[in-house]
Length: 117
Image (tube, rainbow, N blue to C red; front, side, top):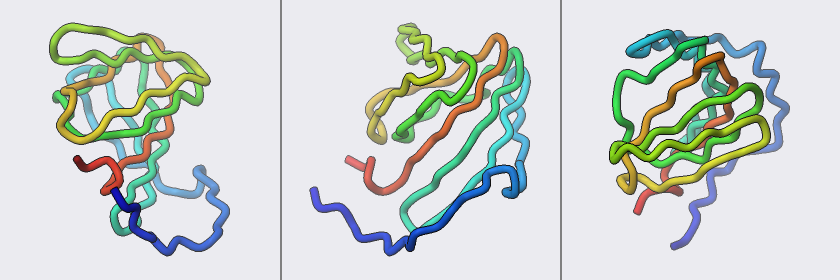
């Protein structure tokens, strides 16, 4: 697989200056600060206490836990706890998953064309 040149020049990102967009979950909410490039989305997402995603996601992601703890549940029932410094990666369409955080967490998520099968 050949990786497309996205043509993104060097830049500093102050995530606090990027407006947050609140997405309600089945329980709680997730606040997204998003940068969108052609074929690449980068987000810092803050899960509230008690957050549970309102859908099973089929998209691929690279997810890195910056702070706190969250659970990534697979549709088949398998659950994985991720804490600060841990990550997971999955390609589009390979695992239905959703996030849950009892006490809140902040994660860095990258997704886009590079994760298509």
